[in-house]
Image 1 (spheres, rainbow over the protein chains, first blue to last red):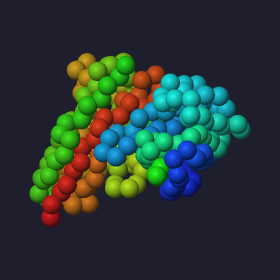
Image 2 (image 1 turned 60 degrees about the vertical axis):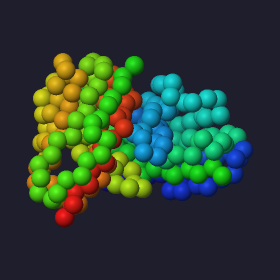
Image 3 (image 1 turned 180 degrees about the horizontal axis):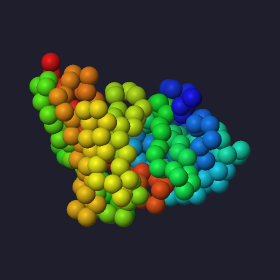
Image 4 (image 1 turned 90 degrees about the horizontal axis):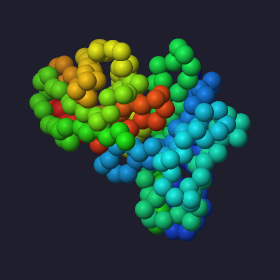
Length: 116
Length: 111
């Protein structure tokens, strides 16, 4: 079946603008995760959804960042008043939860955000 | 707070060598540990997942081991090939949700 998909693959925006990044998880996966990866570093956790609700948003760096998952499937990461320091690759992952789950996370190709 | 470290940060080897990548973590109360491969400009491909109750997992030329008590995991790559050149990331999963990643090991296998 289809894997995790993310759109757009690349986004260039000017400082101060608003951006939305979209993630389509694997069908049936109840858990969805957003991570951010800066150049030369490992990904860092941002937020985790279980169903429609954000179960853990402790990784969001500040209140300019917000994410939603209104129907428990597709998720959108929203960044207001973008800053040059927000430039990174934003990765989305999904996993199947439950007693028989291995909790393995499957990643999308990422969205490369560049703030000029 | 979980912290994950990978050593070495970069590694260059001739084709055919067997090699070991190291991963250490500070909080041994993990649910599982995943190893990923990342090619330049691409997303993460899951290689192996070791549950906390397991000692090792194997897939083809790859073998990953886990020692929870010492907070260490190793990824062994046998008979390395140029196509193995990539960044390898390990990630610890606490409580079945977010992953904490190491900084990665950049591997170059020279023909």
